[in-house]
Image (cartoon, one colour):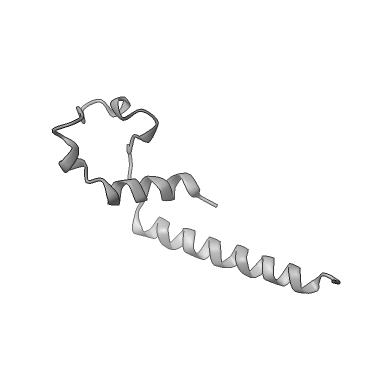
Length: 69
């Protein structure tokens, strides 16, 4: 699961960088520490993550149905 990229997208949507300019120097991404948003994942990546999730979920359901309970 591409959790790191999804977290970066979530943070970019929740905290607008323009709103944070008064609190943090945006010229230095390291000033954010581990929560730096250097690049925001695109909408195409979100589609990929959704397809990945659906495929893995379907494979898990299929494997579970094959098990002898």
